[in-house]
Length: 125
View 1: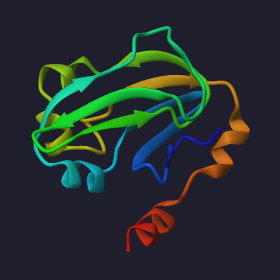
View 2 (view 1 turned 180 degrees about the vertical axis):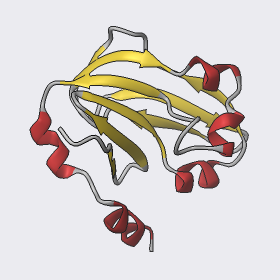
View 3 (view 1 turned 30 degrees about the vertical axis):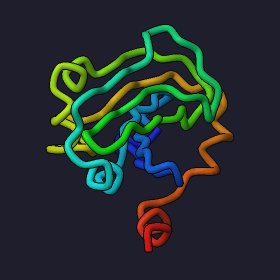
């Protein structure tokens, strides 16, 4: 396994960083800008098993609520309590401090459906 982490994107505006069999998941900078100032975050419980495409979390702004979907099949191993306490962390740093959850994934072939950063940026235009 390379020492560097790989970051991928979904058409649902999630980013995924893979490190070994652990995927860290958050919403993209584009998604947080579209939603506006976030005021509430609901995260899954540690130990919850999810299938790819299941609703995993919810982020709410003054404008709208949006589901965050599991990009992979697996089990939640960690959640970011800091974003529950202060949802604005996602607005301030969606791609790093504003991560939502980590999951141990069990179906590596599902990674093939992810977009590169270039593909994701192209999908926005």
